[in-house]
Amino acid sequence: MTAMGILNLTNQASSCPVCLRLVCKTLGVCVAPHDGLTEAAREIGEDIISAYAINGEKVAIFYDSSIKDDTSTVRFEVAKQLAHFLKFRSHIHYGNSGMYDGVYDFVAELLIPEKALRHVISRLIIPELDSLSRIFDVPVNLVKYRLSKLKIKDDILGYNASMTDFFIKYLL
Image (tube, rainbow, N blue to C red; front, side):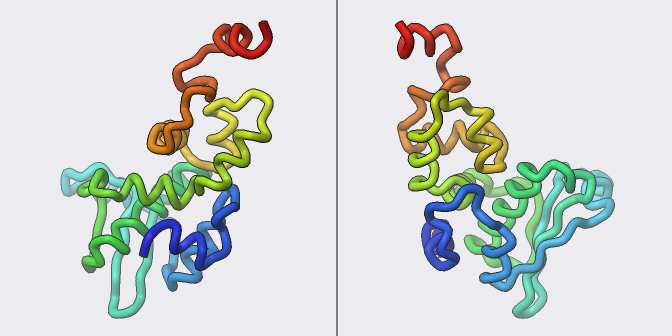
């Protein structure tokens, strides 16, 4: 299933931020914080903060409880594990293996729908990376990646421009 397919299934193609609870509920995926996930991973030489597991028809995504107050990171990690599950459907996954095998594209497309992004940018007086990051509740790097993929990055402050560039371009 594609990110756009999920957005259409959950009627969120124009939403910002996308409700991941609805996505996971619709797909039958349980999401929960897990105390000590990162610490346990370090003991086996891994540096992870999220994982998923499958037991028969049941799927669970876990994220380390130490990040629970950082909603943009939690949303990114949950979407990343959802992408891994949908792509690989192996019984357990953790870490960043395969992160660039379409997984990052999936995460960006799911959490920052193109239609919603273009609408938000058109409504902002001064579109900035930080503003877009807060509006979509995602990390700034994900916004940069999505803008780059959609080739709409030139007018976004904080991407390649400065406030001085903005004033020269728009106010003079």
